[in-house]
Image 1 (cartoon, helix red, strand yellow):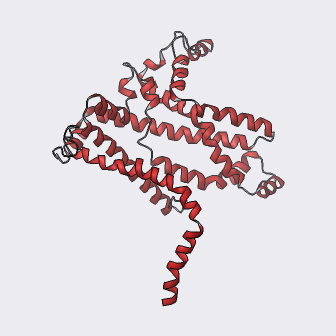
Image 2 (cartoon, rainbow, N blue to C red; image 1 turned 180 degrees about the vertical axis):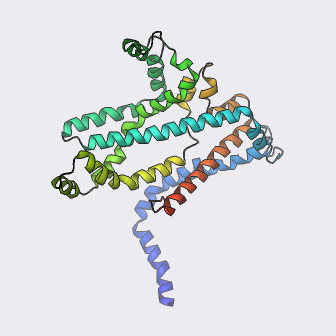
Image 3 (cartoon, one colour; image 1 turned 90 degrees about the horizontal axis):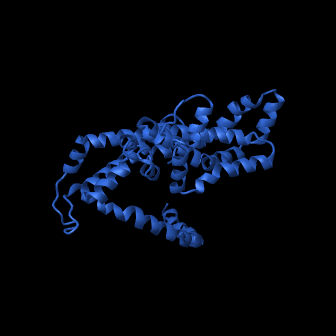
Amino acid sequence: MSSIAMNKPAGFWKKLSTQRQLLWMSLPIVLYVILFTYVPLAGWTMAFQDFKPAKGFASPWVGLKWFVYLFSDDQFVMVMRNTLAMSLINLVFGFTFAIGLALTLNEVAAKRIKSLAQTISYLPHFLSWVVVAGIVSTMLSSDGVFNIILKALGIIKDPIVWLGQPKAFWWIVGFTNVWKEVGWNTIIYLAAMSTIDPSLYEAAEIDGCGRLARIRNITLPGIKPTIVVLIIMNLGWIMESGFEIQYLLRNGMNADYSQSIDIYVVNYGMRQGNYSLATAGGMFKSVVNIVLLLTANWVSGKLGEEKLV
């Protein structure tokens, strides 16, 4: 037993030595994560202070004052509603369209057509949100292409200023996110499909299974672990409905439906100088995301599905 115990550290350090190149390569990433992810956590103390820039972290402590103010603020309740609604729309439509597109591309036999369709679908991912917001604003204006199509189909008689319709804002953001990211999100599903044994498809085809039967009984079960892991990861971002697209498309008419937690934090922290309230809002968002991530991971494990850890 004593010889085994002595050999363990030696084996560990030997393995560490043989992989030192990998350690040196990963060091900049580790330092980056520590510097920009963990070091800023010290700023969370502002949420429990009446923070004044002149006094810094020596500002007086006020306990949970700003959290109480946050949860009693009607505007924050509205912001929570908007954030959750847009996040859920992005989650549901993002997964549905990405999986659907991946299944469709996987069934395309012509490689050139498949590559072209995939390239076209993920090109919007590389557009900045400023460009995307400009495209959306132009298309949804009173004389935009969206109104022209609806009028030509006889669905509407008079043009509609869609960005002036508050209740339409969540859906505009949702479908904009889908259009921008659906092609990029299909890449991981197509990669998962490529690992499925082709002999399964051949055997199913010999047995007389059609395309839908093969998708239902082979493809979807084959990518199920990937779907579960991605759902768990995305639930950890449920409070992150976005900032850029909401900020760029918001106006006075849709303000009650466009303000997310990130915009709320910017308005209080940057514009009004209430850094303590802004920090409390950001801290609440992060804690909820962590709790949802861990809960989803635990539930997935209890159901016998894939887990992150």
